[in-house]
Amino acid sequence: MIAAEGLTIRAGRRRLLCGVTLQLLPGEVLAVVGPNGAGKSTLLRALSGELRPDAGAVMFEGQDLASWSPAALARRRAVVSQHVALAFPMVAAEVVALGRLPWHGTPAAAQDEAAVAEALSAAGVLRLAGQPHGTLSGGERQRVQVARALAQLHGAPGPAALLLDEPTASLDVKHGAALLALLRRLARQGLAVLVVLHDLNEAAFVADRVAVLADSRLVMFGTPQEVLRPALLGDVYGIPFRATGGVLAPAFAG
Image (cartoon, rainbow, N blue to C red; front, side, top):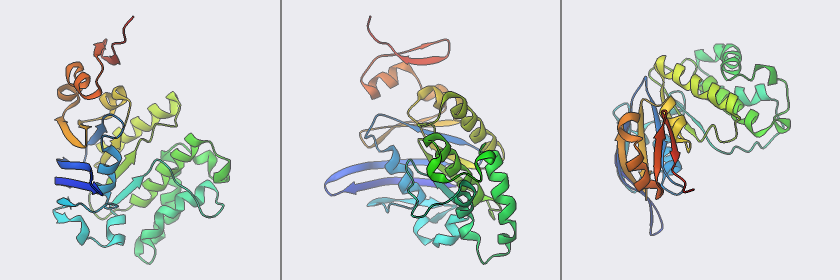
């Protein structure tokens, strides 16, 4: 559905991504992991169309991503960023309703109310619908953004993709687990899900495939069993790892 082919992104003389090739398919969760500065967020921004490649290409449904109109792309692809700033005071339901903007002027706009209600419920924030966005905790705001993305993809006219940049970073254990379970359910329903994560055990739980980035390059791409191995992770992160009882952890001395 979304394919990166030899993707290279530069900022001045610095290469943020170098020759990355991978594919995100409908019905799967692809987790992207790696050290700080490896290029994870840059990859997500390139796959979403926010960044144009300096070399290589990003394809969406077999067409160059740049050939898609913004509105058509927005009806098939939604992004949940790490940080979102609002220009005006809004309650949570109004923020979620922003996801319906790509549908204005189309017959699908008749589904706006139902799409917002369904998205609020799916993201577990229905009780927050009337709360001012500025009064919400960081974790609550993140879940509202997930709801906004789900509302955006409601009624997509073909396979759709959801891209999330560290969505569990501000969530407690309960809500983080609930979000990962939601992503798995959405993938089983046919959505293509790419999620950037720092927690390797979260990646092992949620992902069908894992991409490991380091130094702006793709180091390994495959199933969690193929990729999340202590030896490989030790090389990537520069510290020893061990797997005990199915849990990955740094092998700290002492």
